[in-house]
Image 1: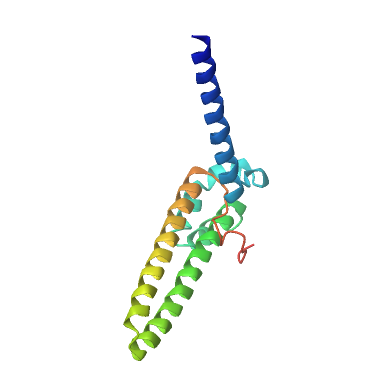
Image 2: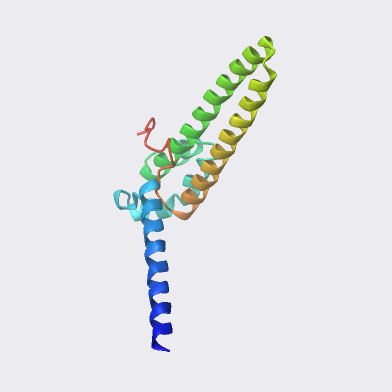
Length: 149
């Protein structure tokens, strides 16, 4: 009976270690920067943080002195700029490949860009949740770029 208990304890410890490793990896992927922001600023501007992913300029007008609102406005602006850039590239490549009659490449390109736009949508949802819940986490890939200081 003790051997079975020991095995269960080992399995539980192993599972806890795997969960801790996963959580550490996710924290490295999306670092939390709350310690750089005033908790009162975060609490007062949670709505602005979330709205930044719908209309990035709203927090800049409604809460211009809030570092928290500016942080999320920057993240929202980066999503908008990335979407615009991808739309331009997609339009150029689509016109080029369709003019050449390369329908197979066009199909592959369409699937690839659809997946990228889905990822951008997921990033937007992540940002929206982070903004409304008071978290200061950079979005994957584009989060390190700062346009709005």
